Length: 131
Image (cartoon, rainbow, N blue to C red; front, side, top):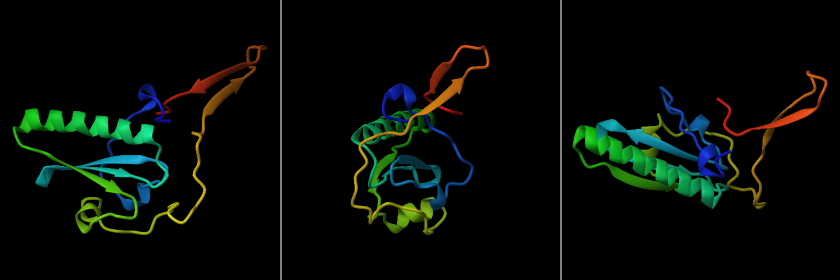
């Protein structure tokens, strides 16, 4: 998902971890104690995913800025070029499965369908945003 705006979604996690990072996705990481928001983009993330993550981060910054009346810094991070401050924000640098060495660039997004013939008639429904 995440290739069109209506498919994009943010999921808040209690403790961010490097183990959640995926080379084909983008992540928005907020650090309230130092007023920073990171947009981490995997090396195989599509331009659409990157722009949606950027839009989502800007919405979060606007919300945080209005509520706390503080300036929030937006930092773009590319997979493989992370600084120590990013790793600290997500609980420390850890090994995770990545596609940094994979030369092939995937140009498709996997899609999920629910297939059923329980009613006696075959039906296929695309699941856009599983939750």
